Image 1 (cartoon, rainbow, N blue to C red):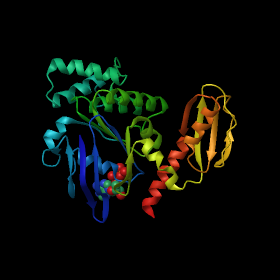
Image 2 (cartoon, helix red, strand yellow; image 1 turned 45 degrees about the vertical axis):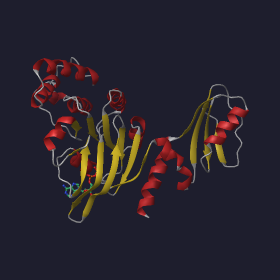
Image 3 (tube, rainbow, N blue to C red; image 1 turned 60 degrees about the horizontal axis):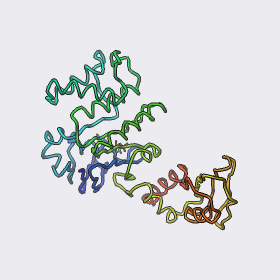
Image 4 (cartoon, rainbow, N blue to C red; image 1 turned 90 degrees about the vertical axis):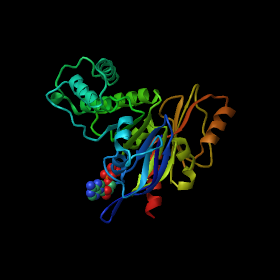
Length: 306
Ligand code: ADP
């Protein structure tokens, strides 16, 4: 549904996007994860047809973007980091305005506006958008990105301005969208955000995607990264045996009878599963801690720097 083919964007001597190639299938929620300056926004602007690539191509469902900008814009919904709204209009009036730009027939316009306001939790809010909090504006931004019922939804740093409640609401909204057959591309520099909503992640550094895959696929390479410590969270249905293993550095049992946090020198999730089963204990979760995934992503970044 989305394809980047040898995409390049240079600004003077800076390679903002450097020969980037990746394919994103229909229905995927793909996360572009990278530090500030990695090239995420530049990639997204080219995909939306808002800036021209220096070379290479972007495709939306087989249609090349820079040669067919209008056609592509009809099929995508884009939320930039800072969405512009008319401050003296309500959410409903703003959405109505944008839906007119897409020539959506009046009857459909009403239904769609109502549905979207409901989806983002802004139904019945009479207040003018000028008085909105950053989180409310962001939610309205998601509604605006969906107004033309796009096949592809592109969100640039959608959680940048949100408080924890806003982040949690945003996750629910994305789950809702992804259940409706749409393809979503979301950029973020915050690992936990991408890991929670995305089915696949591309780790971006210096204009390139240096690794891509599901969290599980990325996590499977952990041993190759040479991390000094790996944290594994274990939860069972009934009690916890004493966890003994040569590669365990220490175990924190303070989380209660059914929980343990293992600090190990390598990824021993499979062995932990076996120990539990040998002790006739049903595992509920044997998962890598977020800190470990963060270290892994940093290792991927360092790999490309060395
Ligand atoms: P990200 O979205 O990952 O933070 P960007 O795509 O905004 O990264 O930027 C990638 C690189 O390109 C940065 O070094 C940035 O300074 C540079 N860059 C982006 N836009 C421009 C521009 N219009 N002119 C010059 N340099 C730019």
